[in-house]
Length: 215
Image (cartoon, rainbow, N blue to C red):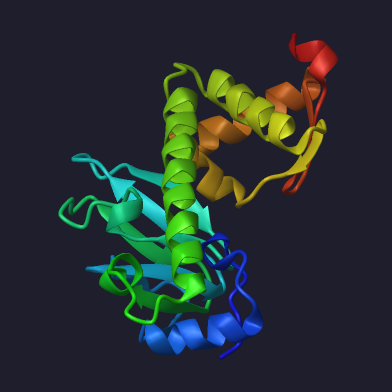
């Protein structure tokens, strides 16, 4: 099986990856675009190809995107998605394949004392920390009251992470509205206002944040 480039498997050679898929009894499953992907029970899902969005709906049916996972992205109940919370769901944004790994095979002591086993456990712990940080960042953005403040907080975060005022949005403007939990039409009007004021330059998903005007 072709190796999935993911933080979970970082540090594994191609040979160790091949042995891991057999030892851990991994399975590969295809999902069609628009299909709801079941939250894995007792398993970790790793996106092999395509993109999957992690979403949540509130009591009023308002949808919020918590995360969009590209190739190598990892999801599962132990990584911040509560399977018992009916509000959470996953959707394939395009045709994709997901590699599923039983959680027990990761956490239980390997009788063969495989070196790659310890590597994957360390990577999983790091992933948990990364997911926690990403959730904290998202909540910080959502804590802003106005659509403009949410947009600016998000743009500043992306610019800081890329260390460049030029960056690419990880998803479409429709999904951006869901991520910020704002009305799409209102968000597009605000973006138009921000462009006219010279705060940002936007070409589809490509953004330039004019930092000297946002201070």
